[in-house]
Length: 466
Image (cartoon, rainbow, N blue to C red; front, side, top):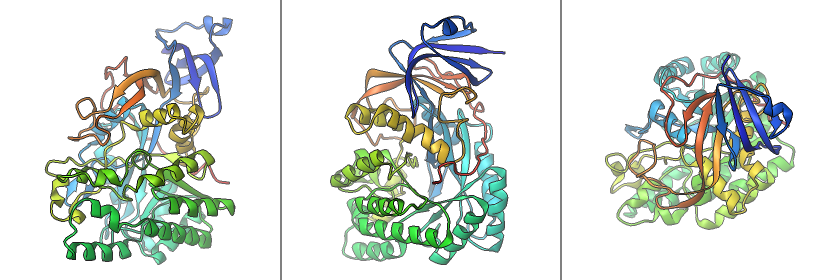
């Protein structure tokens, strides 16, 4: 039996803060005891970690990443190996990525392909959602089988006609199925049909720069699609999780539905909390670095997102990590913003940016842990194995220095992409050490993990329903 003890830190979970020592046995948390008590002093272990003056927090759960995603004629630049290593550097110990069903193929084929990409490559634990691109009778049957196997969430798109798009009838059928099998539908809520009209008109006017990406993907079309998805879910009697919410009008739709007692949930991402259309408008095609969908919004939308996180109208902050290099990938859209691959790097930055939000007074420490660790674990059937520090949980633990200062930069990050979306941003707080199932992955700012340590983790159904 291998034992590790973490001594002297402030243990922070979604519900508690306590100065406690943590005992780890064989990859799981065995016990907590107040620092300095006889019970804690009696513990012996092969490895002791001094966390005095530091936070001891659960490893982050990033419920929205896209490693190696094919998009727009290229691939996301992080592999499962490089992406999970970067996640660990940023204090995230579990990712939930998206396996993709291609049109004309089965869900199983897509899941098998993504399992093959990830198997033996990951530095931290991982799970999969399933992107459903082709709703038919066989697909609906497969959804039942996947839920039984621990793939319990299915993403659909109201955007990207001709690629991932589902019409209202297909969405309703999938929602009806998930109402029966316990799965959770995740929705990319933008009116893609209308957006394509606006894209065509903008290009015809010669409006080709990256900033027009944000102008054609209007906030009202995010709100309209969010409203429509909520009503379809209501008809189906199914829960709904809306991904990467960026617009204050969309937050209002979610708040209204939740006030009605519906099982409707919302996720936002750091880019919508910290970046804006000012970035999309950067000259010399630099704005292409910030092209993602839903798009960045004007700064005034940020207040509604922070308020939604405080009131729990938004429950989760994930990254939608989908990096494309500026050179050779984002540049595919020079002269036509619609050809810029959609996606930002961020899996390494999330925990630090949200700690900065604590420093800035937007959220509390416990809310930080709730939106980044505990709720994503509960929402996607991983709790209490993941997302908390409690006896029986996996020993996914981060030793976090709340006083260290850092400047975010491409020069120092570990994501496989040639720019940082937060270049030059000063933040307070930094990951010092990371354990994944009790094994050191980051040790005092050195990577001590390995590809293949991370294991595939089946999930139960949503544990967050009203």
